[in-house]
Length: 121
Image (spheres, rainbow, N blue to C red):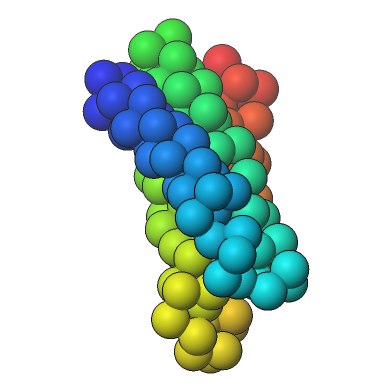
């Protein structure tokens, strides 16, 4: 529980920092399209940092098991989905766009596992 709560807090803070960096540091240097892509990464990053707090609560309430798997799916999703969008914008290789949907699948899996945890308990 503490791990997911701590990761949620750290990743949430990182999302705020990256969002501020994009809003203030990138506006003049990135195209509107690249800025929108980066902001999409930040938005989903923050949503799922908050989802980690929900996973931490679920682990505390119902035990590890599927709630823990949900937390790890959210972490993987942030790395693959948001991370690939950040790298795509900052470094340019378009093949990174192929990684993004894998992160989306991890997000979906995390939500499904969290729902399963709640339904089952």
